[in-house]
Image 1: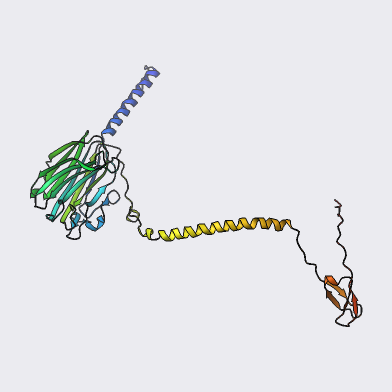
Image 2: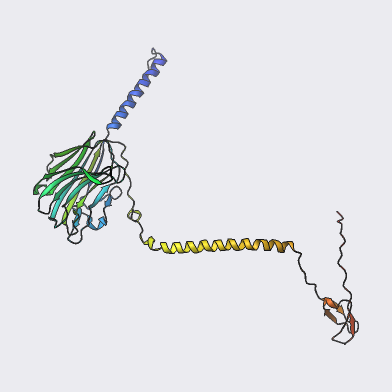
Length: 358
């Protein structure tokens, strides 16, 4: 309440100042409020309302289990491209994305590049989109290493590596964490071995203000269909200072983005039905147009009526006889008594105009 000795205008100004200060405070706290998406895959949990399977036949290789999200490739039964789960909602501004993993078993690839675990970001650039991958991999010679690569397209549309760098590691990193974080425009790739809390920065890149369209964590076979890899993803965490991150709901399995390819087998039938339907409609329209003039002519022509038979009565026996109109004015023989019966002559049509009494 304002004291009575304070002028009303000054009191109103004081409340305006309070409102402005409150608005500035709320805006400041809103701008700095962080969002934290923490997915713990232990306990066979996979939030399919937010996350989705990623990669060809991903559900065949990715299974939620009590210990975490299990990803398994076996020789002769491995995908050609990475598979896993992704967070399909856009992330902008400053962020920290961390994935915890453990590699249970692997064999160095017999061909191709390398196998391992990969944290992948897809920036929202014009298609074909850029790709940023940070992975812990193993070469065919058994060498374990971290690899950071930013793939983009040159002026001719060729796929090139904008940034690519390798860091040798040891078996101590078969369990650990991968982290990609951005502060301002600088993206930093960091790793932590085992259950250590301390992260070691490996490389920095000026990413600008690109919005991250999609985030994926998964296993990579290194283009080797005989890849042998058994691993778990334990956690995925996305922390962002952007308060406007809108979570894109993932369709239910029966509404997923799987295209009903069986409909393509019915396409020839649909085309055949459409073709015959079009021809039938065309013929029907043409037939109706041809009938229209004839109908008009028949409507304009006077109707031809067939005169009815005449009925006369025999004066001798009283029998009623039906005779043709052409016998009018003549005599006919009665079939009953054989007497001649005169047929009255036909009356000429009345052509006079009858006037209405109204």
